[in-house]
Image (cartoon, rainbow, N blue to C red; front, side, top):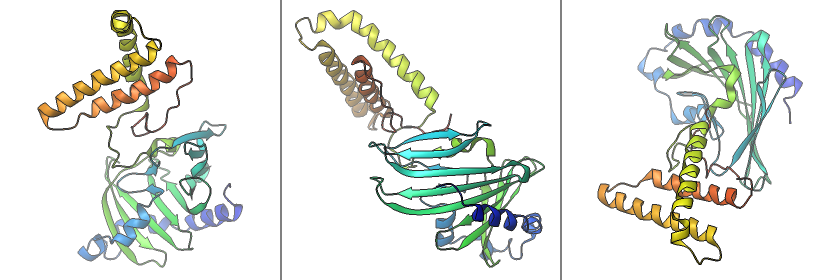
Length: 299
C-alpha cells in the first residue's frame, strides 16, 4: 500500500521543526562524552534492522534467493521496489515518496514471510537532505509500535564521512556513531545489497553479465574444437557436454584448493554459469536470481 496522506503530512510537519536540532547536532549535550558516544545494542538494532541499515551507509536488505523489480516515476526515480521469492511472491516491498522542494524522501518498508503469504511488519524512514550540499543530514525512524528515533549527521569538510548523533523520541541522547557515509536521493535503488555473510564473491551486475558472456564465448569455442572428438555417439550431446565441462572445472577447483588450502570462489561462480548456459542452450530465457548473481545489487 502507498503511504497514507496522514503519515506524509505528519512527517513533513515534524521535520519542519527539527532545523534547530539538526544545526546544533555537534553541540548536543554530552555528545562528546564517553557515555554518549557508546551506542547500545538495542539502539543499533533500530538503526540497522532486518529491513535496512543506516550505519555506516544506507542499505536496503535483499534476502538471499530473491529477485528485486523496480517501478519508476515520471522522473525516472525508483518509487516502488518489490522483492519476490522463486514463486514470484513478494517478501519485501519498498515504497518511496519524493518531496524534492522540501529535500525530503519518505520510505516505507514492508516485510512478509519467506513464502510471501503472511505480513510480518513494517518500518517508515524519513530522510531530509541538505539544501546546500544535498547530503542526508537528518533521519527519523518510525517503528511499528509507535516509537521513533531521530538521527542527525554532521559531515566533514569533504562531505565523505560524518558523525551520527542519535536521539530517542523524548529528546535524550542515545549516543554517536562515527564514519557515516552519505548517499544520493536520486539513486535509492543502489542501496540494495545481499546479506554480508553471502558465501560467494561480490561484484556489479554489469561486470557479472560481462563475465557470463565471456564464459559462454569460451564454451562455444570449446564446443567446436572438442565436441566431435569427446562425444561422437551421444544421444544427448548437449547435456553430456555440460556434464563434462562441470567435471573439468570441479577437478580444477579441487586441485587448486588442495594446493592452496583455501576454497576457490571463482570455480563456484563458473558452475553457476553452466546452469545459466544450459537454459540458454535449451532456448529458454535464463532466470537470473541471486543464486546466479551473487553480488551487491549496485551498478
